[in-house]
Length: 139
Ligand code: CMP
Image (cartoon, rainbow, N blue to C red; front, side, top):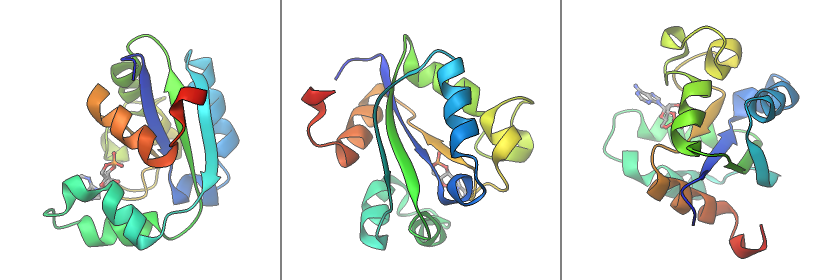
């Protein structure tokens, strides 16, 4: 896995509210190349595994239920300094604290329904990308 990749999901609210196109446009206009992409959904078991790192947090159960409540879009993105630059364009986890013009400020509703996920490290970008795309060598 190269360090110029990150992983994102458009969460159920982003899909449900019709923001897939606008969010992908925002991402590609910011200079990211879509390396792999999938429209899919998570079972509660899969969502629980994806967010296992948060399993001791009070919001874990709600998060797992929420993330398995509807379709999502999973994608691997490529750009220099991808992890850090992507976190800048999505904004703070809590959309009420996200900078104006960021994806969460524009499209998110709440800290849980916050439109998109972005990996927080190169290591997690690789783990999360592999969670969805098992034949990464193809991309
Ligand atoms: P995400 O970047 O996908 O990583 C973990 C998610 O947990 C986070 O976005 C939020 O959607 C969700 N979450 C729900 N409640 C909280 C909270 N109080 N603090 C942080 N994350 C939360």
